[in-house]
Length: 327
Image (cartoon, rainbow, N blue to C red; front, side):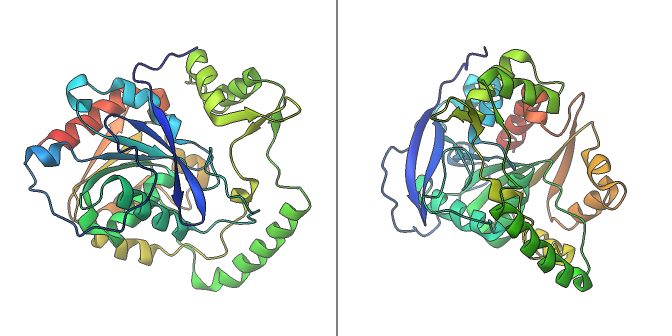
């Protein structure tokens, strides 16, 4: 099984309506109480303090903060020395589970959760923010809503979604109501597994590039045994419910235009958008949206799929490290 080179520690933080699980590397604050938000003290772009801004890593859909372990292990010692690295489990994923039953999740809640996490771990500071997939979309949105809080921004395959015309809104509400009923009937339940090895096999089937040792380690972060000994995914089935509100590209572009931080948008060599949307939304469309970000550059990771931080952690770590430390 994979052995982490830089072991992390866990913290549980009261954030809004639930206790949030956060994975920490480096000299992170250990207090459990959330302070009141502090006025931001903007950092000089090339100052030593800016170089050591806290690094916040946010994961994607049906993933967990531990997913970044391979990238953290691949960072150089000089980069991690004295740096706080934070990787939360989003609400309804990992160990950040609501006590009361939830039947759907709203995207805006991730923004509010992230803000409170930053209030705690980086009061009065800017942070370097990295997001993968859904987490990349959250990071891009938050950087447009709170531009002064982000020093530099890295988006790992957080492409956004196809634009949906307003005329489709009624159909979306119908779909949402029907899927809520399906959840109540148990039709959205996540599959369970007889063992951690079964979870690892599932991970490798989904991502053929994932090595067996990494899959074995990830399986034990991604799932837990229940009282009957069945291994269950640490994700709320309610995340499978479609969001009631349609995706509007014009809103996304308005947010992109407000981003102040330099952005590095990283893609894998495999075209996930082509696989998912069959031409409805393409890499060319995504690249056109990125033109609305005032300071944006792109990078490509070869021999990688959507889980590029698992497939090529050394390459991803090198890109992040170079971008965050360069003048």
